[in-house]
Length: 498
Image (cartoon, rainbow, N blue to C red; front, side, top):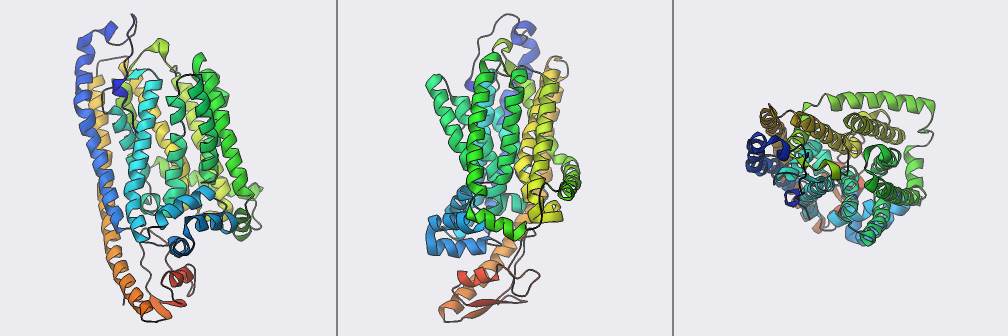
């Protein structure tokens, strides 16, 4: 459940550097503007996310899901989880989550966008609000929600392939929901008050890390890099009262991740996957590392040239400009250059390592497999929010012009959302057209199968550069899964809809 940090109040002391020392006249208009408009401004990104969730009703199975659906129908969620562990990739948690949306069939795909969207925004909102509280900050009502919703918008919709990031359930579970769950793992630690609660949070951290370790290899890498940075730099970026517990919690989470990753990589399914895709290719071979670095440089350029990520900076600016802080009680002393440097290094290192471990499977197609970028792109978005907050704090020290900067940042947040609305509408229309054609073909194939047909024609229906049955091969995967789905022996490639 999201926590609104506006309810957090801190007793002011002389020399606070906030309203006490500057007088109410200097800060009043700024805070009143934020108080009036933070919730209203949040409606813009939330409205865009609601539109995206609405388009989710037009999602229909494709690619891997053709195989998930008949298997869950015949063997249940536990059967699919076992298949993941023993035959596919070893991702136990991943198989369970896939089974949850595949078990209802097509409706599970249609509802996935709404459910996952609400879950991700809610978790980011909770993290933002609790981080504000842990930092002994007081912000106007609605600011944590604004930060969370704008972050979600740029993370989900500023990507080069929104369909695979948000709408394709199989990819979203592995590479979009997974990093948000990893980020949300900090919530029990931020909620913990007192020795017993902190011990409980450490236990939860081990289980959460294990879950992430069996959910996504790339997210596990990102989490290990970030937590290693916390352990190494806690003495420089956290106060005395927080650094010891932060290190213990980070080590507990890392232990859980290692347990999960060991379970994954030693599984029969992971061995089969490596033999199938990575035979003869070592991720640590010099040629592989060189190619990974070259490809990663192209990925970095693509991300840096996507201007909509400035929305995350703008949201952070709003947070930094309107927040009040009790410096003596701060959890995170402000060391802007160190914090920014460590954060940027964590993003760069984790992104490169993710590219290294995916290169043996995808090769040069790492550049076009954008869904695998999301595991570290969320960290990039959060870094931009942090940089914006630090900039806002610096500007706040000079009140003149702060109101104008806050207004400009709000305009940027809204502008980013508006710029992403048209591509989303175009994609939504394409999804609508595909859904109508898919439903028409699905109805016809079910009728033919019920009448006793054993071989049926199937016309591939593409959207979002998704793989459809046959692909470049006349009998290619997942055509056999389509046949299983409709209880026929074989499907053939059709050039037109029935």
